Image (cartoon, rainbow, N blue to C red):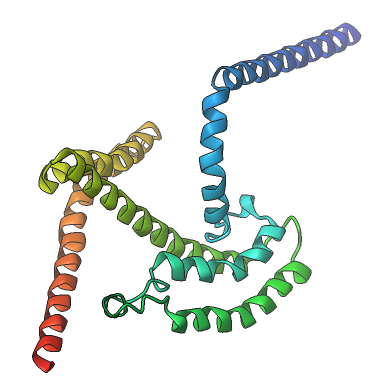
Amino acid sequence: MEKEAFLSSRSGSSAGGQIDNLYAAQKIKMVFKRATFDGVLNKCWLIVELPLNILRDYTCPMAEYADWNRNRATIIPMTFIWGFLYLQGFFNPDDEDVEKGEAKPGSFWIKVGAYTMIPMVAFAIYIKFMTKVTQPPVNIMFLFAIISFVNSISWIGFTCDIVVDLLTLLGQILSVPKAMLGFTLLAWGNCLGDMQANVAMTKKGFGEMAITGCMAGPIFNILMGLGLATIGGLLADQEGENKHDGS
């Protein structure tokens, strides 16, 4: 009886393994069918997405242990600083230089980036030869998480500037007021990310957190976003008036 039970369990497990393999094969087949059906669109999108993904991956370090890649971690210390300076607009010429016809990038920040490369090269050599391939050091991952957070904010600000420029161009082409564009397209696009995050939290059982996010997000945008922008505009106007009075 024990032998028969053992054989039946072995046959049942083998049958289950065959079913799992068949299911996996069917899933792979469906993925290939979908990729073939949407092949042209996917290839066209990959052409646009690939360079952006490379720039993002080598300016924002990995922040999770599962994403650890020692080769990528070796290159990031020498690239993230240039990405940060460019995304923050430090390489853009000043308005005064543009008015004078001397539109040159900020040489000071280029020197800052070059001098920063000296310790960063040493840090990259340390990561390459003193860390393990499969196990990232805790201190380096903590530092990478901070750098990734700062550069992610820089990427978001850079992308927002592009979106605002595109909306301004669209308003000029269609003769639509900027207030109407902000009331419609910009407002809808700004809410899509929050909506997806709230839906994901609700599906995971964090409904109260999603409701709090719905209420707290607009309040934070009004108080911090609009408040800081207004303060920055007032300070810029004050500096312009002081320069005008001094001249």
